[in-house]
Amino acid sequence: MENGVREARIWRQVLGVEKTVIEHVDFDESAAAVIVAVRPQARARSRGGVCGRRSPGYDGGAGRRRWRGPDCGLVRTFIEADAPRVSCREHGVTVAAVPWARHTYSFDQTVAWLATHTSKAATCEVMRTAWRTVGAIVDRVWADTAPARDPLAGLRRIGIDEISYKKGHKYLTVVVDHDSGRLVWAAPGRDAATLSGFFDRLGPERCAKITHVTSDAAGWIGSVVARYCPDAIRCADPFHVVAWATEALDAVRRAAWNRARATENASRGGGGKPRRRPKAGPARTVKRSRWALLKNPDSLTVGQQATLRWIELHDPVLHRAYLLKETLRLIFQLPAENAATELDRWIGWARRSRIPAFVALQKSIRAHKPAILAAIEHGLSNGRIESVNTKIRLITRRGFGFHTPEAVIALAMLSLGGARPQLPGRTHPRMSQ
Image 1 (spheres, rainbow, N blue to C red):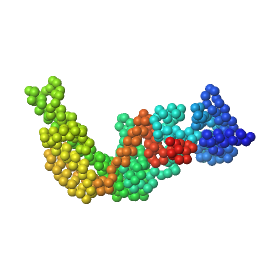
Image 2 (image 1 turned 180 degrees about the vertical axis):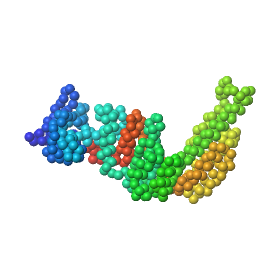
Image 3 (image 1 turned 60 degrees about the vertical axis):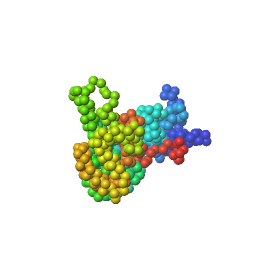
Image 4 (image 1 turned 135 degrees about the vertical axis):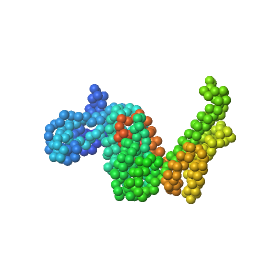
C-alpha cells in the first residue's frame, strides 16, 4: 500500500496534475504510449466544464477519453479517464470539468516555452504535435497569462507603429511601452479604427496619463492620438525623418544618372542606348554611388570615399543633396537648445537649393517641426518599437507564416509582453539552461 501511494504521488508530480487519483499505469502497444488511468478526487468531481460549479450528473458522456501529457523519456504519455456530463443551471449540459484538462498544464507550458524560443519544426518535432495544435496551446497559455497582469497598467510614454506580418498587405498595429520595452498591445490592421481600439481599451482616465507618443508621420496615427490624448507630446521618429531625406537623395541620384547616361549616349552620336555597356564613365560611377551616398561617413570604405570625392568634383547638384541629407541627420545629434536654430537654417537651405526633391521635403519638415524638436528634446525615437518589430518578424519567419493574425499576436505577446512562459519544474530561469 505504501509503495502504491508513493508511486501515485510520483506520477502526479511527473504529469503535473492536482486533485487527481492515479488508478493504474499501463503501456498501450498499439499507441506506443504510457497510459495513466485517473479520476478526479471527490471534491473535484461533478463540476461544470465552463464555470467549475458543482452540478448534478446528467449521463456518462461519450465514454473514456485521453488527454496528452508530458512525455516520459522517449515515450508519449496519455491521461485516460471517464468523461461524464453534468447539468449546469447556468450553462446547461456540459462535459464535467477535470483537473488535468487541456493536455495538462505542464505540457502546455513546455510547448509554449519551446514556441517562444525555437522554430516551428523544432517545437513540433520535440513535442510530437502539429503546428496548429501549438498555435492553439499558445492561445490558451496567453489567455491564462493575460488576466493575471494588466499590460496597459502604468503607461506613460508609448511608441506606435505598423508591421507587415504576411504577404498581401497584411499588417499589425503595435504599441510598445518606452519605459519597459514591452509589447503592450497589437491588433490586425493599420488605420484609425484599429488604433482607436487601443485607446478605447485604455480608457479616458489612463489616456490622460499618456505624456509622450512617438510614431512616424502617418496622418491616421496623428489624428487618433490628438483625439484621445490631446495633451500628450507628439515626437516624430528621427529614423523616419532621416529616411525621408535618403529617399529624396536617391531620387536626385537617379536623375543624375539619367543625365549622365543621356550625355554619354549623345557623345556616341545618337540618342539611343549604347550597344555595349561601358566599363567606366560618369553614368556608371553615379549608378554605383548609391551606398556611398546613403551610408554614414564613418562607415564608408576607401572606394566609397573616392566616389564621394568624384561626385563633389563632377556633380555639384548631387553633392549638395548629399550634404543636405547629412546635415539633417546630424541635427538629431545636437543639444535641444541648438537644434531649433539649426533646423530653421536647414529648412531655408533646402528651400533655396533648387533641388525639387528637397524643396518638397522641407515643406514636410516644416509641417512636422514641433514633433521633430520634441523628439530631440526628450531623446525619444521608435528605436524600441523597431526592435520589437524585428523580433515579431523573426517569430513569423521561425513559424514559416501564420494562418491568422491572432496566432501571431498571441505568440508575440507571450514572447515580448514581459511574461514569457517558464519550463515546468524550474524554480529559477537559469535552471532551464
